[in-house]
Image (cartoon, rainbow, N blue to C red; front, top):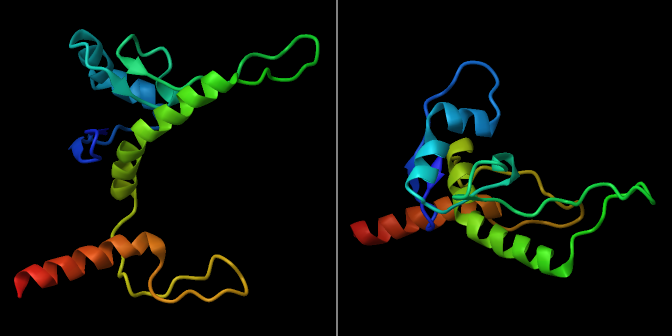
Length: 141
């Protein structure tokens, strides 16, 4: 799927048979080639590493340190770059979540996430649907 910077869905691919990796599906639909040819800078997750100069992905952990056998940590600068990258990617991820989660009744009971605490009102994820409904009912009056 492709979303704009505001998180609005632009394009969703048709289903492909079998299990496909994100990069494989994008290549099969010609998205990677088209983005690189048009030089459209795109923010994506690490699944698209190696997608070409137009595809920006976060920094990955460094390779194993041969002396300690542990992964080398990212520098403070690399972590800051990843944080900025995640902020840019957020709206698109929310658009993807909207495709995966079917709308639910905002007033249905949802199990409490924290034992010993009570939740008043709908689940926070469902608040968006309640807000939209109240806004629409306000405009229709």
